[in-house]
Length: 109
Image (cartoon, one colour):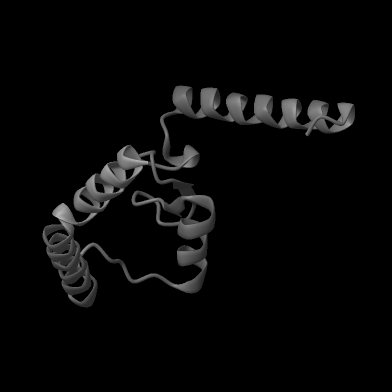
């Protein structure tokens, strides 16, 4: 019984030991994020289509041709790649489509 009471007091002391410091740090982080948000830092202005592609599909407009969309992790779209790389990329896309069709046909999609 005594060990339970001792444990309870130690637990409460540990919980509240750094509470004020943690609250201050959390509030400062909140303020920094709020200022960053209100200053439009790290933001882009995009049309509905571009915003949707970016948020839902992680794609953005190709900076080279400004016509096709590309994955945000790639420097250009497939169409803007050099011929040999474009051919390899299109083969990979086709391979992925074949695998998806096979999975769907087998019912494991």
